Length: 349
Image 1 (tube, one colour):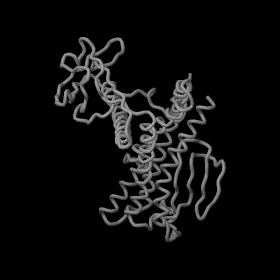
Image 2 (cartoon, rainbow, N blue to C red):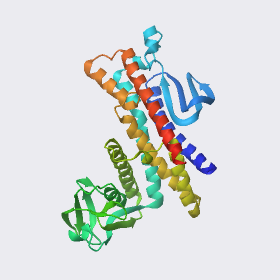
Image 3 (cartoon, rainbow, N blue to C red):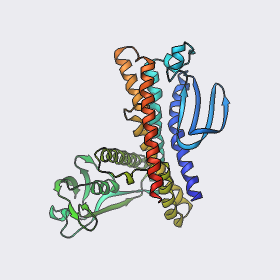
């Protein structure tokens, strides 16, 4: 478990630092005063000051922040803002600064994806077997068929086929595929398995591709795109109540996932451990990028909404009102984090 905790902390630092560095570098390039750049929450373990910015590492691995002068609106009420304060920057500079955090998460995820595809190759969505009497056999799908679309969404990887099948609740799936250079479309009605309590299309797929250099960058994008689709679908299922609370995890739950992954990967050597941890980091980086773009107060998405309103109306929302909205959002997020933490701990008992 000790090694797994170290792996989690390394993943956490990479994902959070890349996000906050996005805010930081754009702010610095545009002359915005960064008061503090910190990773973690709670009591400060150690810190140092360089230039006019304080850099800190805090005790609890549950977040981080890049704090700008005047960001909370309190100093502006007292008239204490310097020229480099956040509110004094043009609205589109502030928008770019806030947006840069999630953007850097996606850039980091893509770079991780490049490494994974270069090292491991990819599995293409080529049908290998068709189950006797299954839904796929009934519509004429055959081994060797290459799936190109499912319900209008492009398919490039085996994982996408598996995911479409895994989350299906019995709805018909329109599948486009290629056979001998010709394109076909069929509608598959997945069949329910009482034993597994889920629906199946009735195929296995996957054909290994050892990517060339151009293909590495191409399929790295497809791989990251898959995790974006995975995250959006998971959020949609969560909102619709199709995901139980036991399937939602916070830091403690992620440590457990890291530990289970490490136990499996270590049997195959250090390179397998590194690549497995990189895959988890890729997923978490995409998750952090998407979650921060949600239009929720206190998150980057909520701040972007206020900046868009300011750009459209030509003047900002009063700082004290915006600050109250973000404070309420932060309190709600803290309550949610406590509930998720309690849920994570309860799984161990």
